Image 1 (cartoon, rainbow, N blue to C red):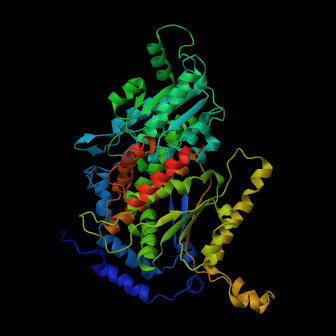
Image 2 (cartoon, rainbow, N blue to C red):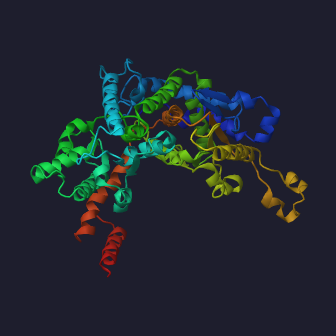
Image 3 (cartoon, rainbow, N blue to C red):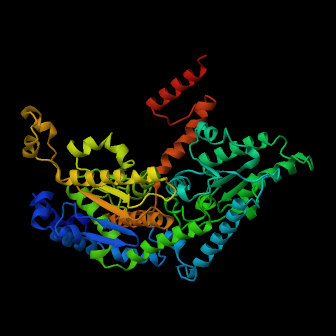
Length: 560
């Protein structure tokens, strides 16, 4: 049992409980009493301007939250992370995604070894390979240029690069088709490849151990599709069938893995295997070799620009004082709502079509990291931990679920993300629509914060019986994140901002944000259940409900 006081018994926690019990303020009154908060409650990091003035906080609230962060030694754990200590306690691993974007020449040690040279060695190999594919120097088995890249992975090996590819679509080589396959549902692979030419398609198989069942199942099916599409696999007719297959696979498959034996057995040339390390968690890995598909799409220079954006926020988090530390403040605001207002979810609402997959990416980052009910010492938690994270691009959401945020019964803190300029390739007419897009962002922030009183509704001549239905309570907190435009660097800054926000909250809640044991049980059970579906095998240990479902499934399969 840890000697550290339980979180809820700390005086800093009880002070916040007392503060919350006395809280009756509305954002209308807070701004009326303190107009300067609009400028004071703003922090800048890199290209990001983060406005948290529309939050249910005062200077006293922030001071109490910062005292809680100090008492729980958030910065002590932060420094241990940057030093390469094994802060992932259940797996006894260092947590060094920050080393993936450390500049060449930096020193970051794990067990006394500087890992930065290894990181840059892999980046250099990735850059060389990406240039060869982009230039046409790397060709397929028949000698034709690669025009299609299909990334096969799942979880962090898919969500990160897929999100970043969509976010940076304007920076990609438009002559390349890039697709992502993750679902073991065969329809996912079918839709990804059905209109592609095998002779012009490169598969990137992303699996650290090269044993992830969904990924290897899809990769095996992709290999069969490729060889069938290439005929006998040897368009020149030279060599025996076995060597032809090996040559074809070697020219159309590369691996992101550390398992040389498995990669070689699959038929991938070990020279085309790009490694990463056990101190990189999957949900923190798309800026490692896992991002090879992205690097091919946007080019090595843009990829390194993105890494610089990550590093900018890393350094800010590492060095900025608490009162001006953006990830710390964002994390503390989440603790304030989750633990003292009983907010169960957090909405991330980007006003950018290109960030359509950003919130889905953050779902894994946040919910897999902080969806925990056990403390670092194994004791159960007695407080709320990670929220449900959800959201879609803003204007789409306005015509779907904003009704609930505005007039429902749940408090849902939200982040509004927008840019002053659209991407440069938009035409004049489409570029002009950007102001309307951003007008919606600013309008929603104001409406959520200040609402519309009954008196204001009556003043518009609304019939009295409709006044309650058209009244908006307001007092819904939002953070607004603004940048000039969405670039590779800005994307890196945004992702690092949320990475470190998640870290802050996990540190305060005293949970291990870097393991994910909750995903294991279902995978183990799926392997046990599969023979019952495919062979009708009697699987011991199935509960009555699951056994009945399996039987119904088999009956439905047999229906002609």
